[in-house]
Every structure is written in structure tokens, then in C-alpha cells.
Image (cartoon, rainbow, N blue to C red; front, side, top):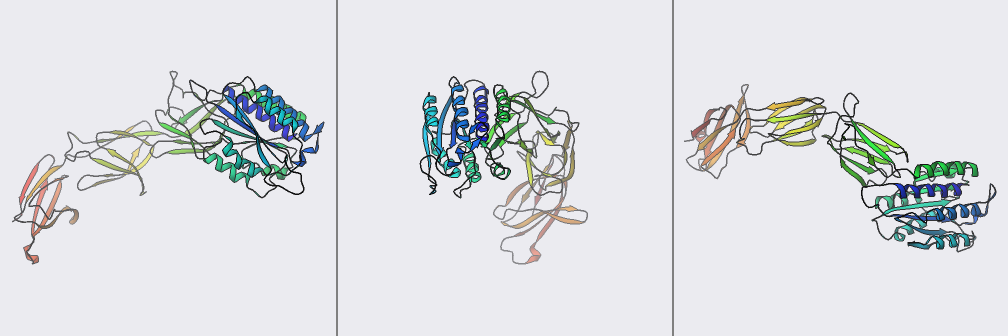
Length: 456
């Protein structure tokens, strides 16, 4: 019964592949490889017949229904059919019908000729599937039909995940035939598992899946503001396959002409992780889609704006600001002055790369509002030294000296752009080997003004 259920699911899945427009224009090629269990246990009675006979009939009917579907290629791999058990032969797996057009009859003939005899090397069969698919440029799908779990010591879950991470296949479908509860749980990590305990239940599942398969699977991503309204847009977002980590879709979020999030057509097979590339990014994991229905994916990401302003042309050139979340060290973003950038609602620490640097703590960014940070224009100090030497500039702040920069010990004429404030410069010429030759001069920097000092 489980095998029948699996086959039905496979048929439905095939319908999904055929019907779903994953992108506008030419439909992508889909390849489905059936991995069919022909181990000795398939002789067991199940409902009206044996597991093998029921599975054969259902699979063959499915193959017939796929004949007229465009952009679809099929293949058949069988295990447990070449050697008798006992003894156990864990190498008993074979690609019986490779991918190709119009091979439906070959697959049916092979399925009808099978006689269960051997063991169940599921992991080895999945490993072999990697070379069965001609390339990775199609939607490559494995449908496993089995009545038992791995019997050869392999790890089907690890193999399945490796195939997905390599981008070779999408998440496999597993159709179980008459499995007990303990055995069913062994397939959960492999892919999307389907189970039927009776033929009647299988028929019901088959009808539901086929109905879903004949419809496109659509979705919209609602990026929610702080009022839980889907008003946020024009932000890049990425949907990753949650199992393999592979990038599946990458879009700039769009509101359509009606002001609602635009509809996307997304492959319903995968479980997804959504990352919205706000600053900082937000993500949502374990997203599943209901095939044949319109799905809504909501994620909270209220944003506001930060405008960095300095009047006129900056004497620093391209002045930058380091942005961090409040009380955190990690750099989130580096923003240029004169720009307005979008940030997630919250509090941020800013480090403006002026000389000396300006630090601002807990700057508030609020929903749909613009926070403006304006700094005064700098001034200029010109230093003339009699010879090359050593020195530094300090800022006077609340009775203390704060280091700003070291002088260039190879130049006798130097210019420095500084923020408004009270400063001191100290200098000692090279070759003067006594501390008393130190020269110290205070000076004041005002916006857009310059001051010249002779350090004799």
C-alpha cells in the first residue's frame, strides 16, 4: 500500500513539475528518476494483492499518464532484483532505463518483468543516482518507492542531503509501502515522505496530490512594518533551500500596481529559508508551501532611513560612517556622507571617520522616518617644520589631551583636515637628542577656516 502511495505521490509530483511555470518564458526541463524496490519483502501480501503487483500496476499507470507531458524525462533504477537473498548482496542496484525521450514503454516493460529476490541497499542506490542524471541544468528529482528501510549499513539521510547540497537533485520523494511507525521515522530526514495504510487511503491521497499538481504553486512575500502591514518593499530577498543551503530565488521585493506584494511562482518541493537583506538582515526558516494554493510568507522587517549630511563638498573626500547595532562591536554597514540608507528599525552606534573620529551612541531609526545626522565642516591646519622630526596632534577635551594623529616624520610641510575644536601640536626635530627641544603649540580649528603654524 505504501508503495502505491509513493507512486501516486510521484504522479502528483510529476504533475507539479509539468504544470508549474517556475519562470516566465521557456519551461525548465524536469527529470524524474524512479528508484524502485524489488527486494524479497515485496512479495508480502498487501490489501488485494502483493506489494509488488500493486506497485507495478500503479507505477505503470503513472508512466502512461506522463507520456504527453512536455519538458519531462524519466529514468528507472531498481535494487534487490539481480541476486537472491540469502546470501545478502549489497551491490544489487542497477540503472535499468537511463534518461531519454519517449522511453515510457521501456520503463513499463522493465517494471512488469521484475521479480523480487534480494536485499535493500537504499544508500548505495542513491549514491549511484548522482551519475544517472546527465547534468544539473534541470529540475532533477528522485522518487523512491520502498517497503523497507536500509539493510546494508548505509546512511540514506546523509547521502540524500549530500546530493541536495551538491545541487544534483531536489529534495527526494519517498513512498512507503506498509511500513511500521519505527521504519517510517527513518525516512523523515531523507526527503518528503508519504505513507498509506490502505488502498482506499492511497486513492484519496492520490486524488488530492494530483489536484494540487495540476495547479501552479504561487506565493507572496509580505515584508511587514511595525504595524504588521505588508508595506515594506524594494528590498532584495533570497530564498534558500533549507536542506542544501543552495540559493533558489533572489528578487527585489515589489509591490504590484494594486499596492500589494507581487505574486511569485515557486517550486513547492523544497523547504525554504527566507533572508530579507535589510541592514541588518532578517530571516525566517522552515518555510513550506502548499502545492496548488496561493501561499503567503510573512516576515517582520520595519525599516527607517539614515541621512548623513555635511554642507558643501567634503574636505575629507568620500567621508564614511561605520554603523553598528547599539552596544555591539560587529560592523553592519559603512555609509558615505551625502547618502540616505535604509536600516532596520532600532538603535545604532555610529563612528564617523572624521579626524578626530566622531562617535554617536544609540541613534534611533524609526519606521518610515528619516534620521538626519549633520556634522560641522572641518578646518585646515598647515604645519611648517625646520627639519624632519617627530610629533603628534592632540585634541583638548575637558582638561585632557586625546591623541588624534602622528605627524609624518619625513616631511617638513604638512596639512591636516580637522574637525572644529581646540588642539595642541608637539614636535621635536630629528637629531635633537634632548627632551627640552620639544616644541608645543596650541591652536583652534574653526569650520571652513585654516590656520598656519611654524614649529621653530
